[in-house]
Image (cartoon, rainbow, N blue to C red; front, side):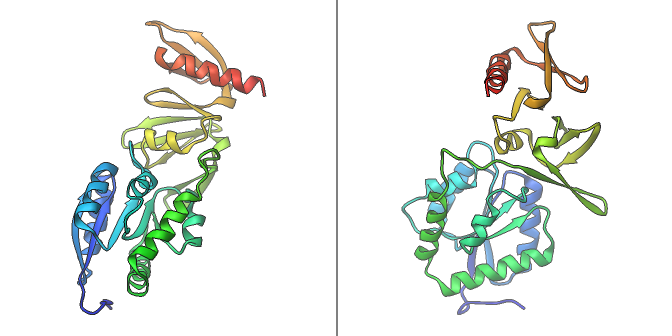
Length: 265
C-alpha cells in the first residue's frame, strides 16, 4: 500500500558511483506512486550541487565513493537543511550502529525488495513527523561525533556466496587482488570474490595493517616476509606463504616506512 502525505509527491535522488546500483534503485522507485525521481548522481561532487539546486525530500546516498564519500557529501552541505537520508553501503560494519542510534536507516548491498520497502516506509514517516531542519541537525550531530583522530576501519568483511554468507576478519586476509569489477580476497590458500573497487576497499581498511603495493594489489603487512629487486626498477613482495607480488617503484618507499614503523612497535 502506498503511503502519501497530504497528496504530496516526494522528490527523491539517488547517489551512487555504480551504475547497476543506481538502476536497481530506479527500478524499485518506479513502483512508488508518491515518489518522483528527480536526479541520479554518479559522484559526491555532483550530489552536492544537485541537492542544493533541487532540494529533494529523500536521498539514497552511497557511503563509499571515490574522491568524495557519503560523509563528505553531508559535511559539504553543513549549515543548510538536509533531506532525509537513506545510506546505501556494501559494508556491514561501516558506522551502521551510529546510523541506527540516530534513527537513520541504511540499505546493505545487495538488499531485498522487502528491506527496501521497510527503509522507504521509515523515511516517509520521518518526513511526515519531523521538520527537515530537525533531521538535518540530527544528521550533522552524527557527522560531528566522528572523531577524525580515531577513524573506524573495517574489521570484518561479508562475502556472499551461493546459498551462504562467509564472514572474514580483516586480519585474516593475506592479500587482495583486483579482479575485473570485483576484488579477490586471498586468505589461507583460499580466494573469495567481493563486489567492491580497490580504491574503496583501500580507504576502508586500516592503513597500519594494509598497504597498496600496486594498482591491482593490496597486502596485509603482517604477511610480508621479504622484498626482492625486480626488473624495470620494480621490486617483488614475498609473503609468508611464498606468494610473490609486484611492488611498483612509486610505492616502495611508503611500504618500507610502514614496515619499519611496524617493526618498532
